[in-house]
Length: 77
Image 1 (spheres, one colour):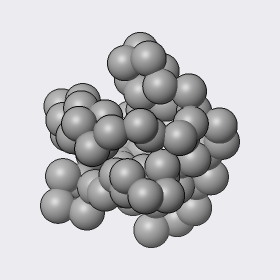
Image 2 (tube, rainbow, N blue to C red):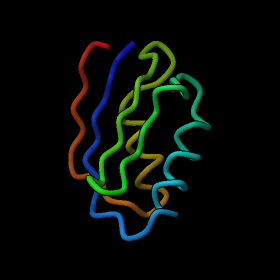
Image 3 (cartoon, rainbow, N blue to C red):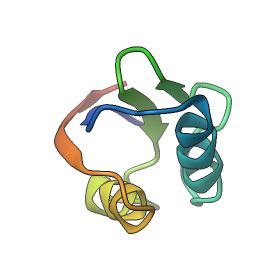
């Protein structure tokens, strides 16, 4: 498993957070129990199985929703 911290553009409403969470939970390989999107810090913390999913797929899913990904850091979980 890998753990990613993804810095997003400033989120303007709590529904943005909910929309991103729902989209990421739909990806096969994301640990749904530890997924966290913070409205106040505009940051997503995602644990994922790198054999099923790449960080680029996660960041593309966020970008496809219309949110800018400023940076993503990946570490071993």
